[in-house]
Image 1 (cartoon, helix red, strand yellow):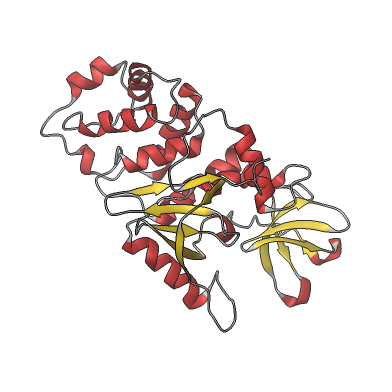
Image 2 (cartoon, one colour):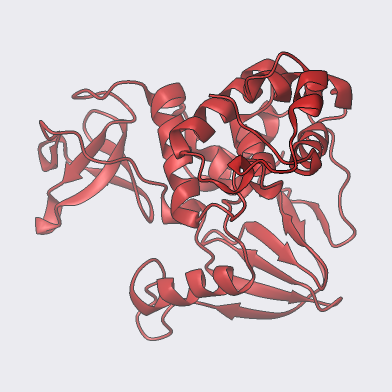
Length: 306
């Protein structure tokens, strides 16, 4: 499916966003790969095909088409698909209005199923199962089968007896665990910016007067002058009910619709000897090949990165 544009504003912005992911890529290389993913022969054809009266840039491009474009770009440029998804979203390449948080979750969990977990199966890691312990009937990802059985719930890791786990005949839907994307609270920094952090006190987003930054989860944030929580002060509940509404509402007010970099640890949570969210962050950091300058308000978190 060819995507038509009235001008080159969005394709240029997308190319710049993608080129910023790693210093190894030249802008011209990104432009050529982007053109092919959008069904053009090259950047020149895309440039000459842009028509001022085109309506396609404001039409809805399906999430299935968006998924195809994201994965083609990731493969062609050897970039992490999560970074490509973020760049395509921020540049508004495929639609005039931003994708919703639910749209981003659909893309993430679909990519995980296709490229990380594969097909479902009894006893197969990455399969969504039912936890029957204590009459809960809760969905969870199977991490490691056995006695005990290790699971990943919406709120984090857990263990169950093998007979407490059921693999339904009809597949259960994939999900993005709240533990790796939902803000648990926020820090106010000395410079008056704020940093949203996850349940494990790992940074998600920094919001300043003129920008929103997607933060690396291995950063240790400095110069904190205040701390607030979205969790219910009476019960400690943080991932459901009014606490969840407060956290999501805060994201919406800050116009944060994408998913944080912490969600990129998901594939690592199913690797051997990963026993915590922090272990997943350490694996993600070790797997990366980008050299990123530390911002003035942070340093490496030595509790996560050895």
